[in-house]
Length: 267
Length: 342
Image (cartoon, rainbow over all chains, first blue to last red; front, side, top):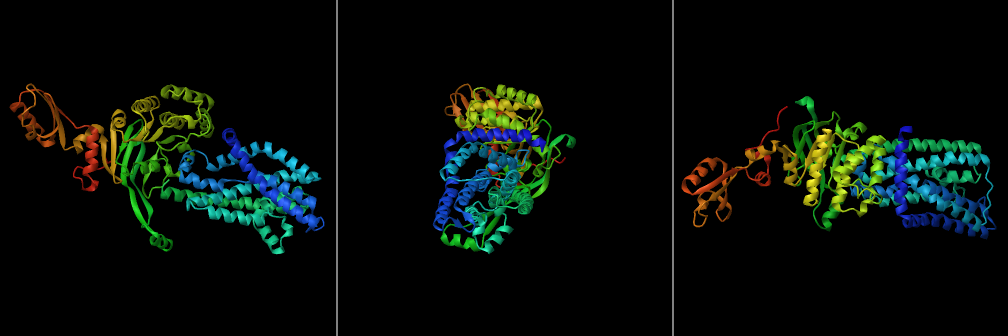
């Protein structure tokens, strides 16, 4: 692991330099990531106010904090790799990556973290601004704050491995937009992005427990809100580790199969 | 000399399966249910070895299988059959130690990052290839010197001309000092001066490092300047493996005879001696079947007032063109040379 340090340092440096070249594009991307949770925030806040200040155990302030936290967690864990791979394969850029003596996932991880690091300078103040504007009050518990860091890292890694693996479908067909869209729609319901999962019917909640999406987004958010018991925290971390390991195995399998296909059909 | 061979290929083959579809809406709908495929033999059982330090020209017309072979040797493609080792590695296993010791430069592919200065891509390669700092500095200085990169290093790739970019691409591909170079059309699209510069650089690099080079090029000037030995493939099959100058002996069924006449050429029945290629005041160039060279030159000397006469092999470009035009299927070619048996 230590051997990768200089390589990651090199990748970070490059990723930051490239991002600096695209400041406007970066801001537009950010705007896209902010508008969606902001929209849900406004809708649920209004619904809550009209329902007398509470819906399904969430008070108006809870909705505000939930969606601001969701915006942060979603930003910290999102990837764009599923859209990028098709372009890479079509343009022959993947061949260049294959000739390097390192697995291509490393440059993608570094690229992603580099972008997040840079955008934190906008996301941080924006979060405070939104909290002030919507008069959010939040009293975090020290242990949830401490647990949040590893939970967020696990959420990022599991999301990264799964989405990187799904991007590999581009080896079989370069028309994967429909698949990407399906993944996003399913994720919207089961990740808690659209609404806190406890507001959904029981069957959706049970499905969310089984699927990986909840552990990528809703779980870290609920932890921040103090809505997770220590026992649920351990179960959640167990689920994250399971999905991370499964994602890793899936990635290894699909990457090997994908490379074989790529190498058979013409790189 | 099997023990010295850095690249060794034995009966290497590659068959692509390509989808086929006729034009039109009906055909498009039919292809949804039943997809038609066709097998294309890109490389057909070729065998050869390249020794350490050799620069070998890998020639063939478009679609001959050159790039497919280079991709197999650099680990980008799995072969359908046969075997190959480079530096003792099976390339398609893409062992990291192998990838650190070879490079593939393709004329139209780029590893330079578009938006950042060239030197920063070099720095990234230093990290990825784990090149120690002093060795990296030395390599950059050397490549800057050989390729005249000084004014380019601080410029973003997008601001470079094609020739400048190609020089930087080559430099980026050589920072880790690979001992095997696969160069696919390294001078494509470059002007004559830049081509000459790149050729000189390849020679220098080969001399300095003893690297083994396998190079494809459509420019015969590249091949003539760099390669004593050439391997010719056509329709995926090996057609010739030997010295460049032997190519004419093997394949060109004619010689070029240049004659200088004291009393000019007007009125002389020159066509009876051979195919008239060019003529000017007092000088004529004839193409003569190889077998008739001795008798025709004898007649020329005896029957005309000749002040000078030279017999030459035709230009290598003509020979190559002749080979590709005359031999749609190399198996049918009477002069086909079998790969050398090791």
